[in-house]
Length: 309
Image (cartoon, helix red, strand yellow):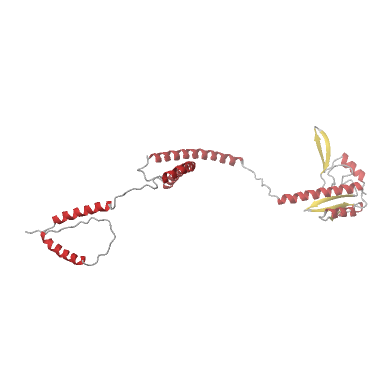
């Protein structure tokens, strides 16, 4: 037969594989129990699952809670020593089921089972909340790789500074006109340099235009009245202008040119001119239409002379 007091004396005074002792400054402070059926986790007479013939606890497995009950009637069959009852996920229904199956158990043990059920429900709720949140993934970092990458970054920074200095010097020389006769440098670098220069000039033009707009806006109010006075000057005055001044000068030039041409022409061509004059006289008898005066044009004649041998 099982005797609980004898078992507890052996466990308490002797050796127990589930017992864990903590020490503080060389002194034992608290004893804990690692048995999975312990309802409190403490190593004492009331909480020991081995030294109590009538015992109960609550365990959790894959999100479900189970009520484990141990009775003296099944002590002779260790295979069937514990009775497992699946509890519902509803907290109130689970408490009611515990009260139903532990009706004749000590009140302290029933209370401890309810406390354990409450704690299990609380950490299950926290687990569900954590699964919904985005958790950072912890990855181990190799120190050797980090040191190597750090050295490479430092070298790349130094090279970048040198490249910038070289580029700035080349752009300065290009602006100064040192490379006017050279056309075999890379096109992309040349375009970048031109874009930089064009951007600076555009910014300067924009600033100048903005300053000019500000000045014009400030002077527009003060100078508006003065502009109106200048526009009103000369209103009502009478001036006399010579008529056809430009056309008369052009006509005099044409007459002089025709006189020189007639002097230079040979005598054989005078008959042709007389015939032309007769035709003109006959045509002059017709009614003349009034034509709009046009500006005089200069006409040049080419005369061919026959060479006699």
